[in-house]
Amino acid sequence: MELTSLEQQLLLAVLGLHPNAYGVSIQDHIKERTGREPSTGSIYASLDRLAEKGFVKSRQGEITKERGGKRKLYFTITAPGQHALRQSLQAIHSLSQGLGLKGAAV
Amino acid sequence: MKKGSGRKRSFKLHKVYDVARLRAELEVIKDDVEHKLSFLLSSPHHGKTVPNGDPHTDVTPREDHVPPKLAESLLIAFTTGRHADHMVGDLNERFARDCKKFGRRHAVNEYWKDTLRSLLPQLLRTIARILKWAIVAAVKWYF
Image 1 (cartoon, rainbow over the protein chains, first blue to last red):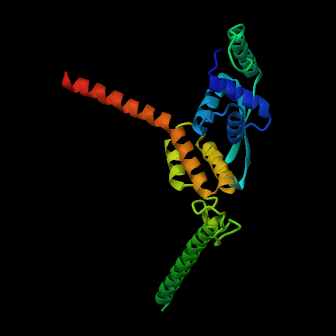
Image 2: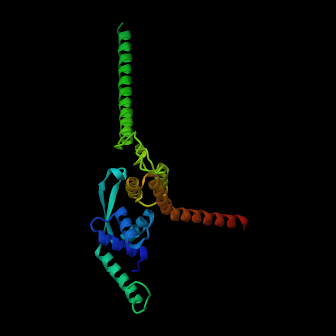
Image 3: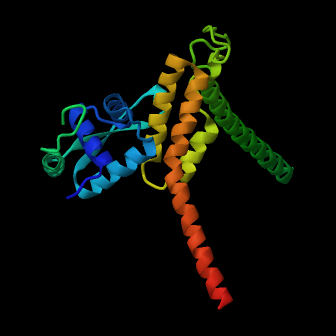
């Protein structure tokens, strides 16, 4: 199963933030590490696709005052999600090996 | 006499019913106004201006944590998925955080930016769909 780069980043963020992965924390996590800030809409659209494929699960969270009475939606990665992520990262790794890319180590 | 008193009583009962209904309606309105006022006054610095050194980002805290309503409404209206509520919640949370960190002006800009970036793909898809149907209709009409 192929994953887009945003889907890879989302799965990695969900895995890294477990069990506190929700919209804002995922967005911050990706921005901190990649310098790229995906929009809230694209995050939810991608997570929706991943949930349809069975790669992530969601559960309703608490309501806070700052959120204007709206609930958080926490995401966790499933076993098939971890498997797909591992395969996808391995594919990137094997493609990039031995290329002698200049700059930072891959 | 009896008939008259009966009529009077029913009239009185009718009046009592009306007064009770009006009272109930007034209670509902009062609750609604109290709820809205408590929301507006919930900011701890209500009514004071907090100077922060920057004339552009000085805020009147009554509006501190109230995100731009138009952007919020647009997001709710045009988000087709089932996550409109969660998206608005996330944007509100970021807005409150940005307000504290950078001031209201910056927070409003960020809110609008994220809203438009979130809606743009959907708007483009909708426009493309409308254009497609318009072209199909035009071709059918022409031939």
